[in-house]
Image (cartoon, rainbow, N blue to C red; front, side, top):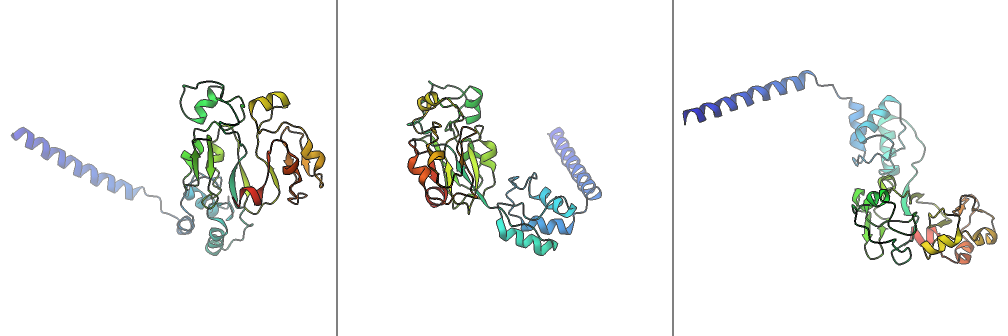
Length: 272
């Protein structure tokens, strides 16, 4: 019994000595914080999402103090945070480009058939490494990697369709889902953007193969290009790209598209 008591007493004494030593060295080697950086960090939303281009709010604050970053890079905080940073730093910046995430794919399990039975790791990245699970190799795999990284509850999976649903009232445009998606089919769209957008990412130029792989994928028929009254659609990259400086949301492309791949951003997406 005495051995147990001696051992316990020794352990407590050692813990006390080590704790005291750690506290001393922490204070002795502590790097004084910058009051300006602290104020900037406290004004940031604390999401640590990296949308600003820096690994976390702390590093973004330090970059502002060092003159290596502007005050308008926080898309999560938006204009209100930029105004706070302007008041703290005395700097002026460009307007914050508020964006939201848009899934450039409509290839649900109903429209984009599976290639077979997939038995690998049930993540989109796992499916990508295995060569994909659908006939359309450009489509959403439906395992919700994007949902899992969203810190704002703006994404949820529609398991029946196999596609994520985006809640635009909650989306902050942090870009985490865009970075996480191995297919690269989640795009950033400005919240004030108007015009048409193609909700398809199939770059295969072979119309027959595209039609077979997905019932609503863009088949490169060029009807959108030929019928656009503003001549603002380019199909050079095998996916229609809209010149928003010319597009007036007339909806002709959406009307003429036989696959219904076109949507009007302000009408069919952001207001949905």
